[in-house]
Each structure stands twice: as structure tokens, then as C-alpha cells.
Length: 315
Image (cartoon, rainbow, N blue to C red):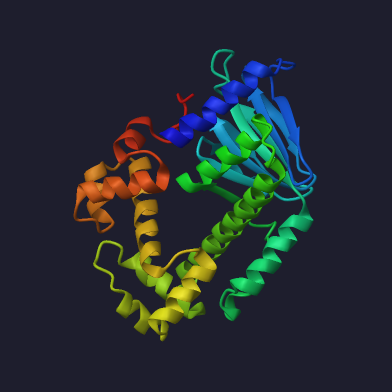
């Protein structure tokens, strides 16, 4: 819970030092030459509040709940520990069903230039190319990027917010590195979503999609890397490199991540922790709990108790 309460605590710190000017989307702006960070607090219920994106706009929820209404009839709740990315020129409408004066709904946004995104994509294409049949690294503005992010991303957001709030002398360096890392994580998440979509609809699309489909179909079973190598017709080192380039981890770490992602979805759907644990291939509940905490920053028990609003009461 450290990262979640840490980010919520920083929102409280920001409110303490900045006067309230509006009850709905009260905005505090921090700027540098690398990025523009805004913290928004809403103190009363509101509907259809419009947010426009001039550049790439990364949004991270801190406390409370929003409901997003976007293009192509997109509608979804936006909750703590989640990321949502808006393309340049995109507009969304936001509802605030739970905002209260003593329990504001808070989120942060980072405005990032398209030039910075191009630099990150060029670097990924040069240093971490994905399989040729899957194309190359690029930002797909037509693909909705709305995901429950990991604890590592949560800590990254805390470091970036701290660089603004504490007027760090190395703020520009911290932000430069932080924005690069955040964009890299964003691109890898978009690549992962694309990979899973291909694996679901056409596992023969590439060797990697065949492996991804096999992993998803056999999560409850023991999965050996040697068998994955045979499926991909690759050596162990080549398979590892392909996964590392596209997903930022090796194949067996990806197996663990997919198991935990599916277990989290089961818990949200009302399954017991024990059922979720064994359904995705873990044979030791303690090991499952440790891995879940490492990936999401909360124990399965706390996540189950608090549902999707795991950071609702932090800070």
C-alpha cells in the first residue's frame, strides 16, 4: 500500500499548499520544458465535464472514481491505480459520481509532446525491435489504452510528482528519464494488448502470438520454456530476446504476469482468492500472495476486500 498511499498523500500535500478555486476539476499546474503535470481535485458530484488533449495526455487516477465517455461510444469507470491515455485532439467527457468536499476525487495528468513520443518509438525500433510480422513501434491513436497499471508504474508516478512538489534541483533530469520510462511502459502495454488480440483471433499470425496463445490456454498447467521454444521454433536465447524486446520481460516472467492478470480479473468477478490462485496454476497460496503484492502493490486479500477501489481510502 506504500505507493498508493504515497500518491494519495502527495495529492493531499498539493491541496494543502494550493488554494481551492473551483469545486469541479480544481487544477494545479506544474510545468517544465519536458512535461506539464496537472493535479485535478473535484469536491462535488458533476457530469459531462469535458477534457481536451492538445498533445499526448497521460492520466493516472489517485483517489475516487470517474466515469469516462469517449469516442466510438467508449464508456468505462476510471479508478485508482489505473492509467488512461488520450491522443492529441481527443476529447472525453467525465462524470464524478462520488466526489465529496471531505473526500475529493483526484487524478493527475501529464502532457507529453509528440516529438518526445517519436523519440521513444525511434529508440525502441532501433534497440528493441519487435518481430517484423508484427510491424514496428508506433502509437496507435485508435486503440484505447486504459489499464490497471503495476506497482512499478505507481512508483514512477510518485517520483515524477515529487520532482515537482519538492522543486528538485534535478527536476528536469528526473522528468526526462521519467517521461521516457512512462512512454516506454505505455508502448509496451499497447504492444501487449495487440499481441493478446492477435493471439486470441489468429495465433498463427507469428511465432510470438502462437506462444502467447499457448500460455493463455495453459495457465493452470506447468509451462516449460523448452516447450515454448519448440512452439516458436527458436532457441532459448532468441525467444527470450523477442519477449524482452516486445514485453520488457522474459517468457517465464510473462507467464507469471498473465497468471496474476487473470487472477485479478477473477477476483473482480467475485471468485475467491483460493479459487483464483489455483485456477491460474499456482500451487502455493503464499507464493501467489507475494507475487500479487509485488505486481499490484496490494495483497489479494486487500484487493478482494476493497474491490476495484483499492486506493479509495488511502492518503
